[in-house]
Length: 395
Image (cartoon, rainbow, N blue to C red; front, top):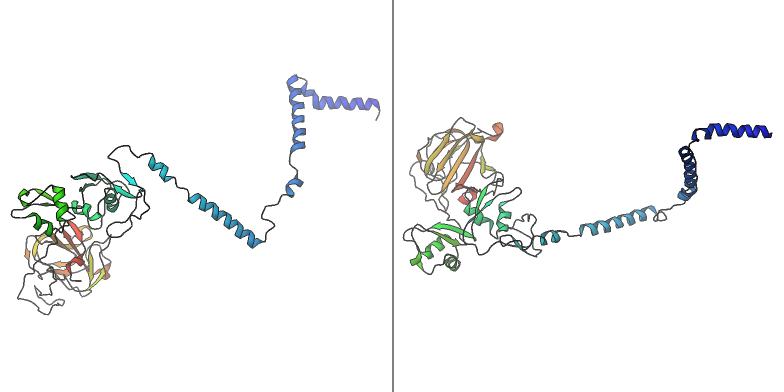
């Protein structure tokens, strides 16, 4: 190429690539970017370098490589799950005040007096809450709390808290915001009546005599006052025995049949004075969400009073909160019985009924499943607390 052509090429190059960078800033940007690109091309990893990379386990056979990877992951998970950060969280609140719960370090499993494991929420160890307390205190139920957990926090048996709160059924169901009375110790408060002695009271409620004397600061019976409350240590409510009223009418064979027309039946009486309310098979027993017995028979047998009492409620032809046509009988000693889903009732509120009297007919009213739902829903309560019908001794 001749010299004029070379000069012409340089001139064209200058016009095309450098003409727009006549300013100092333009030239600095142009040459700086070229330098950066040149430097990056020298230091960037080459494809050949990456192609030679080999995983540390690639040389192993596939099965062995899989086992090795599983082992590594298992060890890692074991290390992570073995970390215990709870101790640091609890130590931060120790010693704040005497009213707070103190903890003793223990790995014992928490369970109630019936042997059921309870949630610790998230407490561990043995609970000690003001063991010198000698008066009741109030506790407001919080979200997630159960009766057994509350009792554990106060160092009490679940039954003691249940005895002090008649609003709590035997299913131990609580509502958020519900106020509970927490007794000072395991036991029950009773009212002293005229002529009762300390020994007779403790024996009646199956308590501990020495502990009762110590707790109430008593020495002998002379210190008991009629009408005052006495706390029986380790006591429990009295189990009332219902006396049977003998009848001379009706069937004497110990069983009854449908549509016989009889108004009373003499059935075998249990040791505690109960009889069965009807005939049939138990299709559903007593459990957490069903605090009753369901006795079914498609023959629709008559319903009998299990013990003498007065009709306190008689609701016929209504939904009745799912009970349908139902009755409640007050036996006058703390016990009440409820008979639900009946087809017919034969008594009115205020009527006195004797043991074995026919009060209605089995049916399928209320919350039942059509013709297959023919049964008696039978409940028994003592001082407002639902009890399992098994205590009657007739099933």
